[in-house]
Image (tube, rainbow, N blue to C red; front, side, top):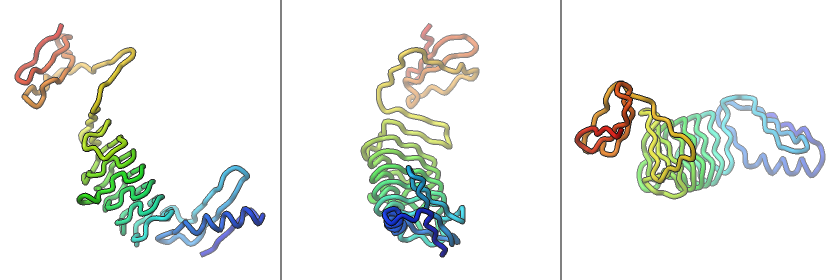
Length: 209
């Protein structure tokens, strides 16, 4: 492995040496360059598929393009790629790909199976119990009802709280009447044909204007 320090001052070189001790590269990366431009430290990798690991990724073997920062972040990853985990034990038991997990203990999974793929989870212990794919969590606890929950594959967003709109809220008019069953009670939509706002009472649609 070729190493290059571009700043020759003792203090900077010493600091960069310590910084490098926290970095590991899994895959085919054989060259790194760490520079200091007076304001920022800049890390350049020769191989775009290299992993960036800080106190994490101990079990990675052939996985590529992962960024794991924090003690035991992505601990169970081996061959998986393109995950970004930031925070102590973030995504600890995850065995999926293409996840973004930010927060200490977020998507930890130690109470069951690990996180799947294509998830975005943000906040302290957010998505702790989640094992699926294509989920969105924004929360600051391990609650199974996060403040903001989403499903990317279903184009679904749920807000588990009160929503205040200061100015205008716009509903896209629908030309096809949605279903109205017990599970749909409280659903609201704008009918494109009648120009009426309609509410589902659990059995039928009621015109509100």
